[in-house]
Image: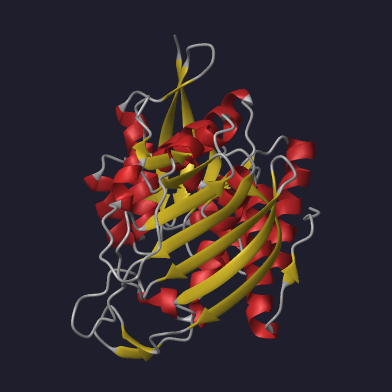
Length: 391
């Protein structure tokens, strides 16, 4: 079988997410396994060029991971006809302009989310990509990595098997304590806490929750959200204090229409100022008439209707039930690869052999739509409807 090269421009991969998940654990891992296998048995080998502003940093990154090509001139990279895919994991504020430039240069585009900081820009770039797809065969995609996590794949298997019966509600708990920087070193970039730099919990995470809710539980119809900045003063990478202008936590309720038309309520707590006492950094607790399940990043536990215990409320005696022991572990029935890598393989097959692919830029725009609706809800202190998005 033959192996073909796929020229790939990777922009913004010196950051934490771009470097760890997309370069090292996805593209480098794909190269190490001998490429992506196509339906006919042929293989595709990604050949990336790393593009960034800091020549020393980008050169060191390329050298450390056996990448032969790197540079600082994005326009020159886009002018190279041999590189047909453009990927962006840089700043959200620059993303729509970079994607538009790449699309106009005839490149297939794939990017991190959010695809924009506001809905107008998100819809504009999604429309440009769709039009280029119809007229020039341009392929496009947005990262929706959480759909490929083992825990959520097990949860979706339960849903497709009818385990929940009529789905009632979803409770999503996300977050951990991000150090302020005065006593312990920060573990997230300081720009995350500056609104003027594209930071904020709602902008960062509601894009994730939109595709998770839509795909696993039901289409989002409306949202009520309260954001807040619990920690107004933080310290940056240089140890200098600064004012935190972005929300570091948000609390939302969404009304969904389930896959069978049933009403589903989703409650979402997301915070970078919470200390964890649960199974994982994110958990999804789903209740239905026939069963319930709780999933984290890797694991999923379920409790069916017939196996539901009978607790009795008595505040005068110590609780004797261990509720954590009353759930059944959903077993690993396959080897679960890195979620980012799985979606990269899907996108590469989509580009090379036109394999089906649904995680497009219009899907990414839906995430920004929910962000904007949540921000409007917080500002106006009311429920906001989320209509079908026309791109």
